[in-house]
Image (cartoon, rainbow, N blue to C red):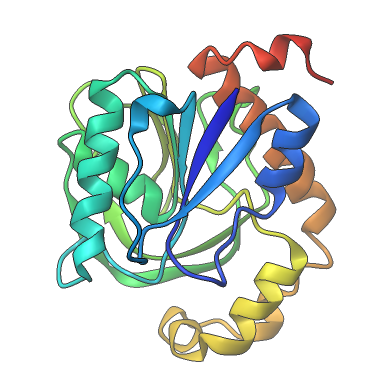
Length: 226
């Protein structure tokens, strides 16, 4: 059973998702949406994961943003479950009929959420790093929220989360070194992003979230996995 990972940039890889997939018996193919290769057919995959990006769904982004939304819409039409992460969640919301908007203040840092499904969406800690929020698409159900708005929703077999369950300590450290303008706008410092106090708990929460997605999506490998 193979999933397709939509990656938007080099410094935003699948991270913890790769190790989880290996433990659960899933193979992963990675497709760079910002490249020149022909887009794959969503029906060829058991599920799709759309990762984060510094690009915006709210308008003014590169051409591949619209292509990503169209691809996720096609995956939905083909009944292929999607896990949308941050930018991927916003793109999925747009693909399903929701709207995406710029937040007045970016949400950056280690956060917690109020969960309506704590067995599948733990309260955190989660690494948040986004400037956009969204309205729920028709038939979407809010699973988690905080002061910045909806943080997770489900729609049929899909799951979307505004935060980053996939990040490793190394990914967070790399982002903190390069995106100082985002930190300034959010009113935080690189020290606030220190993964050391949070990484172990966040990794355990990510495992629960990924398993929850697989269960919601009906991916049979979970039943026989570790």
